[in-house]
Image (tube, rainbow, N blue to C red; front, top):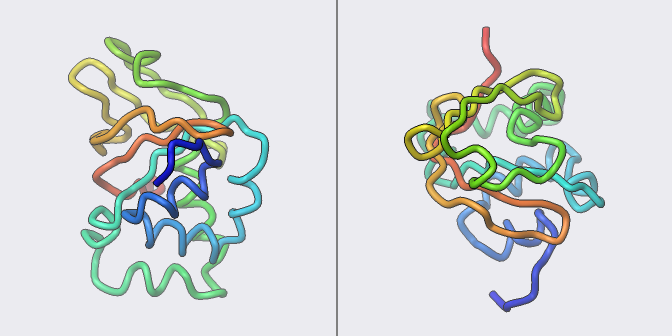
Length: 141
């Protein structure tokens, strides 16, 4: 990867550890949105996080008939605005995601988002920031 900063999608592609996320974003038709002006904060599950889901879950979600469900899951991982790790250290917040629901961010012991641990924070992009998480966030209820 070069030292040039890219948008969120191109940064995820270049990293090489988000192939499932990139495929899901493409299947949901969110690529253009996440290449847009933003800024966005993306909690990006690694390929290992997707692999931890029940067998067949990802294959089922990327089917065209499940686009709405996939989109809802992916939008849980996106916050409007640019939130850096330092912005949440020592705090507990419940920000509204791009899907309109909230996630619980706990910055009192590292940073977690709905229980998913941020394993790499503050990957700068031209239109926001990526924080790598170890678990895929799923809708509550």
